[in-house]
Length: 161
Image 1 (cartoon, rainbow, N blue to C red):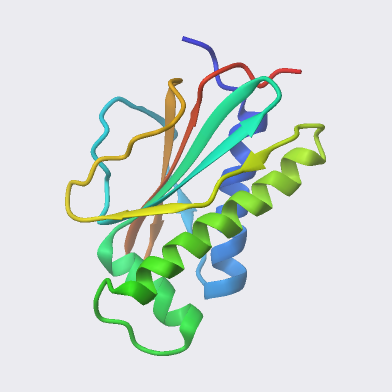
Image 2: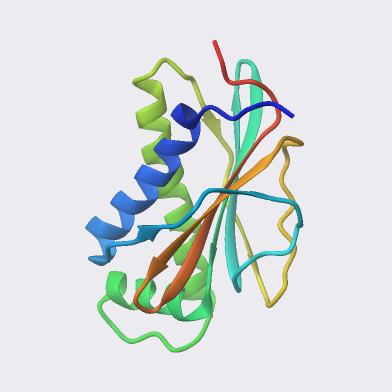
């Protein structure tokens, strides 16, 4: 198994924290970085996006517990949200796009070129996350007052230039 360079993973984590701080006025606290072995999601709704570069394939999955995504959506829209509906599903896709776009900008400053696909959203208790890359899956749990969400990054090849 290849060792994942934190120089690659950290921009996704930094971007996620930045998006929630600026767009939802929430301050997430990161937990311990782990390798994830199973495909089952840790929450009820996941945004997944594929990434490609000159010498790698990767994907990002952001999974939210129900209470967390309802709170984030309510804060970003300025109105109460009580169920996972089309509005929440669209919000997860948009959050996934914003996080990936922010990470792409940070990585380009370090000389990495990244192409992004359109995000896909999967919902349901115990849903499966299928990455398009076949490398190790790095997951970082984040906590908020209302619950947890998880940022998962998977790389198929070395990102060293």
